Image (cartoon, rainbow, N blue to C red):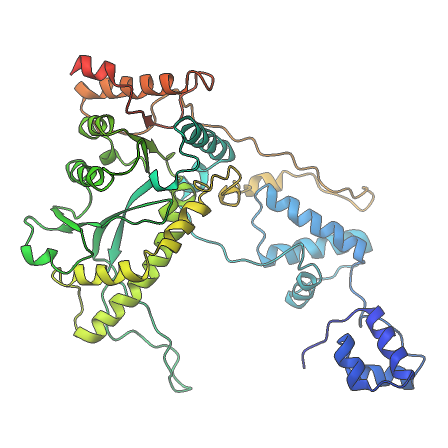
Length: 471
């Protein structure tokens, strides 16, 4: 039977009203106290009013332990359940002198008592480069530069001109379903579906008003079969590459179609994208200049937190894609997705997953629009505390007064923004010219509004005199 959760005050009121003539059912419904408990206290006036068995630690001592755990999280200690139980046992021995080994039952009730302060969540996988790359300094710097660009170019209230583009691989992985089996069966394996290792690249672009542009789908092939382009979302474009991934040439082709789609949009237009080497070339920069398109590159290893399409839109789209692929395999009986069928599947995906609501959710969560400089603070991964550091901590004796630890904010070091850290993939002849163009653009566009520090790589369509003179 599930244990009821009620306060001592409610129990006292329930017993008092029961004595005054109310039924146990009425007071039980009103105060959340079991009727049997109310009747027992009425018949036996010597029963103790309390919350059952006393806890190992007092409320004040548990409050200290809660603050200790929260501070340990701040400095990067991985607080697994076994770690918390061990810390709790050591703390009990320290304050009571009793050697008690706290278990999972104690942890369960402890977390329930302090559910407003602590909770259990499952860790997520993250690459070391992403964990170490997205620091608080980089987050703040990004939003400072983004706000400067939005306000300088009068974009803060024009979501329809703020775009984000990103490539993503759509695999033949299916969504595993729940199945009913006999009691003796321990495992059930999927009987149909792909390997999950076959990917097709699609470049997706949307704006902060919720509009989504037609996809740019790239097949892994030598030549493009005309049958592979039929039945896709209206306006879709298709291409091939040896690897199936985007190339500098293919991105330039897509950028020309982006210009065509935004030709009737009031200028300037802001395009946010990651710092993939294929995204920046002399051709793309010249086209951006001619068509008043501002290019803003995200910091390295930070797209999981700062790129609008990554924060919300793609995650839901990938789940929808798995369901679409599952239905395709069940319907066709095939083990792989034929290229001739891909456009129709993408059309179904676009109508169900890339809705204005999902696109808007990505821009809002990333703090791009509506602009929110406090967004994504929870994605700043705390650096793990090394075991060696823990072993070097001074040991506390029972004679030492217990005081909450003083945690100082972590010191985050920003990459030197005055140095080029993004691999742009240009040959030696054009690389210096491009770096000069970007640096000249940055210094001129921000000269009046901010000290002379280079922001994240941007391109301003009004400033390319140096490139014109050298090319």
